[in-house]
Length: 72
Image (cartoon, rainbow, N blue to C red; front, side, top):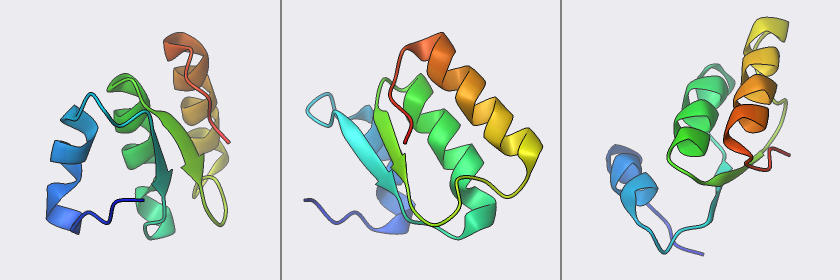
């Protein structure tokens, strides 16, 4: 795995060699980071709870279906 400093995560999403990311951020950032990653073409694994609210979880699921990216 590759450790990326928090301020560098946009560069990670832009890297075509990265196929998937693990979202291990504070819970309130899971939805934002997951959606951004899937829209950048990355598969996503979230840790802890998937999202902070039912609305965030539904949005994450919707983006997964729209982009064809795995969300686990």
